[in-house]
Length: 360
Image (cartoon, rainbow, N blue to C red; front, side):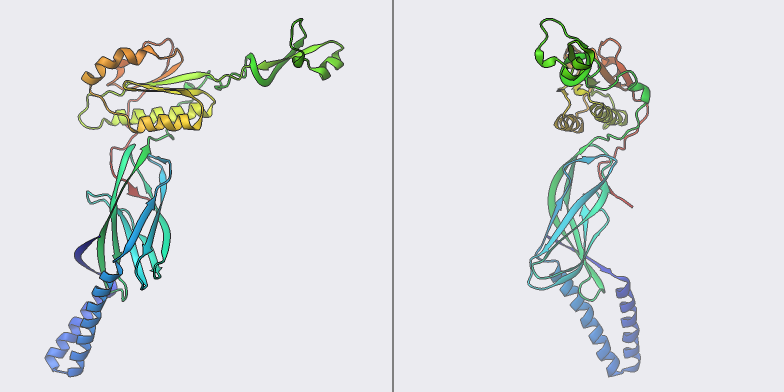
C-alpha cells in the first residue's frame, strides 16, 4: 500500500483551521496564556487526527468480486470487500476503484470496522466497450477519528474481467420474419412431440398405434411425431478494417453480431459464428452462446493485408442459411451465399472508451 502525501481537509477541518488561526492571532495580540493553551490543544488535535488516520489505513485487505458475465453498455454490480487486520477499530473508510489514467469510480463507504472484522458492499458501474478490462487497484481514504483531515493510500489490486459485447441492440423485425423458430416442429420426423394422426399402415411400429383414437374411429390409427432437430444458422462477420486504431463501425458490428446471436438462440436456432480467423460451430446451448460472446469480445481487428489470405477459408464452410454482418470497410469480403440475411452497419452505436464509469 502506497501512502499518498496530499493533505485533504474536510469541511469541518477547514472551519477548524479558521478557528485555530483566529485563536492564534488573538493569542499573539493579547499574550493571553489561556489562548496559547487552547491553540496548542487544537494543534495537537489536528496532528493526532493526521497520525491516527495514517494508522487506520494500515493492514487493510481489500478484494472485489465481479459477476461471471459482464456486458458492455449495461449496468453492472461489483462486490467490494474489506478486512481490518488490526487489533483496534477503524472507521470512516471510503474505497475508490482506480483504473489509472486519472479514472476513479465513486467511493464505497464503510462506516466502521471492528478489530479483525470484515465487511462487504459494492458499487454499480458501466463498462462502455467489449474486451478485457484490467483493474489496477484502489484509493482508500479515511478521516478517522475526528473528521478534520482525510488521508489516502493507494493499494494495488490487479485483476481482469472479460466484457462481452452489447446484446441489447434493437434489431429490425423483418430480419427475423420467415425464420419461424429454430426447432423443427413443423415437419415430420423422429422426435417426441406429436405431429399428427394418420391411418395405420402395414409395417408400422405397434408402439405408434394411438389406441384411444383407434377405439373411437373403429380402425387402427398411428401417431406421427415432429422432427426434433434444430435448424442451424451461421453469423458471418469479416473482422477487417483499414482504420487506424479502433474502428467504431467494427465495434458496432460486433455488438450487432452478439445481439443477433442472442436473439436467434432465444428463437431455438443452433447458431454458429464465422470470422476470418476463428470459428464457432453451431450450437443451441447457453455455453455455445457464451463461447460466441467470448470470441466476439476478444475479436481482433485485422488489417486488409492480414485478412486477404483468409478470404477463401472464410467463405468455404458457410452454410446456405446465414446472417452476414458487414460495414463499408469489410463489404469486399462478403461471402458468396445464396439469399443471405444482411445487416449493414452504417452508424456507430458503440462507445470507444476503455475505462468504466460510475452509475449516477
